Length: 388
Figure 1 (cartoon, rainbow, N blue to C red):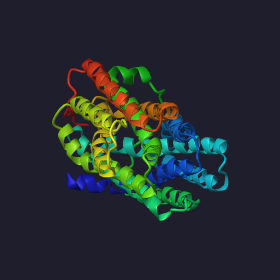
Figure 2 (figure 1 turned 135 degrees about the vertical axis):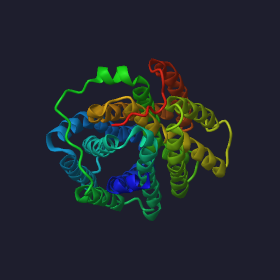
Figure 3 (figure 1 turned 90 degrees about the horizontal axis):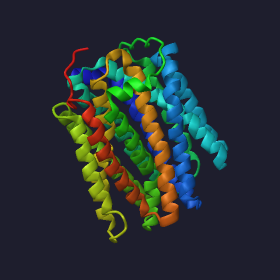
């Protein structure tokens, strides 16, 4: 098991460095725009632009991987992402920034597709939850460190964007130098959305709602904390606590999901998240330490949804369809993450920042009902032991 994990170290390291840059960028956008009194709707729009790019990138990535292979697709996308980040150090007007974020999101989608399809093609179902958990642990650790780095830039100048660009360049190195056997490019074929929805509807539904939750959290949770009259250090602690909690939960959740129904675990997560977020509706004047505890619990439940849905979907899809599956799942996640910040930002603008967690509670309830209903289309949600 540990030898298998070590063999994928280059993929894990690349993901770690990339997510460190993304973590810093997301907090930087939320805090810097709030300091400039930018509306929560526009802050949500900037983050939604990134996730809209993920939607386009799902299709682009599939075609690019088919045409050039995994490594070249990753390299081209890393270069494009770096350029888009550096352009934001030259142009700060909101409209060009929205366009830059769409292109960067599309390029990042390709990078995620490369790593995730590479992993899923070369691991077996009985180990999928745990190995994918390591992948997400590295990504979560990178995100948490990146978010904490905002404390090094209290003036909120343009230096964080330069650091983000560096992360994307450095993340390219392990992929290019890896000696791991590269997966073969898939055979050209159109993306069959109907096929995937028929085979794994619960996974697609989970990805869509998880996108709403995660996209809203990364873009608007800083606005929520600032609205509670806390400053940049508290924002960094709140965000990092949520992400690190999700990070620490990945391995035990992956271990558990290799033994029980993944759909059942998704429903449990949704139930806990809906209860915890009710406490943050603004009914109670909670001290900051209680907000941090709530962030930890919500982080465990919301940040393990992606791995559960991804593992469940790959359990039930043959190997030759997994690049296409990765594209479809990213598109579903990206659509949700694009819509979520816009909806949450609109609600917060009309009714106050406390409405952020009302939105999160509604998403959690919808997730529970969606998986409960769509999960019935499969006779078994456990990890199916199938040798590839």
